[in-house]
Length: 205
Image 1 (cartoon, rainbow, N blue to C red):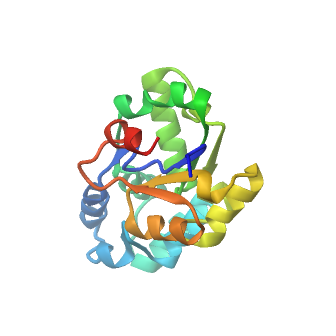
Image 2: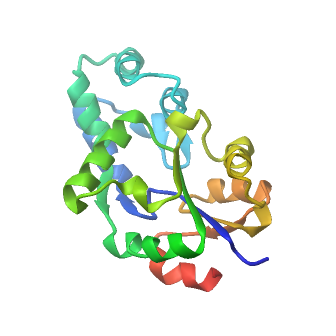
């Protein structure tokens, strides 16, 4: 079926994500087993709760200190957590204005208030306008209260906007999120490392 709607992930699609930088930053603070806490394909319940908006940043900082036993400040945790956020990809973002005229386009990102505040400020300072303006609606897991790859997350977005799953393309850089979208009946594009949105998307339209 022809693609009429597109739901985009954020990290690895429009912004570079460097998980190793956050790992290195936390290890420098004394977290020896950070990989056991968080990876691209796995989140400790603490991080999952943050991404679903069940923990405020302040509660997260307190819980992180309790989990690790470290005496570190909120700012140290925040800066280490934000270290993974790289630069936006201007050429990928550049496909959105024309696409918004021809398709219903949405953002669906597993993120959290700490990252959200950081990357929205970064985008505003770099490009001079709000990143969310590129989409008809931008959905963030900590606000939606749902996160990928749970099928209910995709279904909530489809239902909210009256989208037909078979006519909707979902784009993400994480295989398990693609699998969740396929279970919800969406068409999918896995943007594996090295692939660029502006080069791959035309093949699906």
